[in-house]
Length: 217
Image (cartoon, rainbow, N blue to C red; front, side):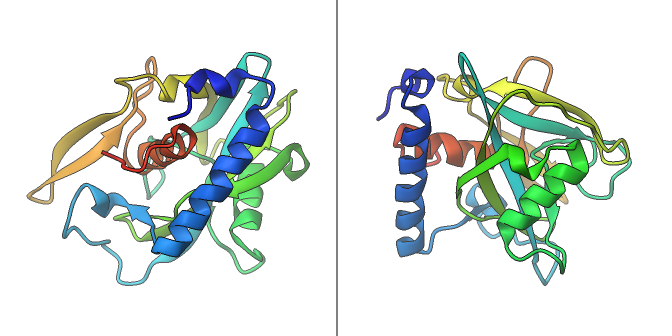
């Protein structure tokens, strides 16, 4: 297992690139993707047809280490209203691949210029119960970071130290009743923010990759 403090060192970028490349090779060989069903066997997406989507897992390279860029969605949105998420959305016809989707959505939602992002890999695809087949695209973001939020979609943008998600005990498993069934999901709280569901699941995947874990449990 890699010591989390390694990701505060001078070789942190190269280490993340290598970890992502190795993880994608293993995932492709095993046909491995993730999703809400990981913790809820038998619970299927509510839509018959999955919608391709992508999010940007942005790692802001601060002097003390990487920070993860997250947003809080506005309360009136149809899907995942008010939840903590990565910038992103569904793939449009003009998008050539998940990377172009993630970068376009990040620019539209928080005003992050694609030129500020160095794409370095992707995590496992994540299928949500709401019917989205999401590719989490990982990219380095170099300061200074100046954001302009789309107030119709994003209520707030904020940063969380990557080291926080590597702290023992931060990853939690919670449960609630959904449509008469007990649904289990990951949560990774940070201060006043309740990070859960798909976003927490993708963060669990990221930390598994970076620390050398092979299981999500």
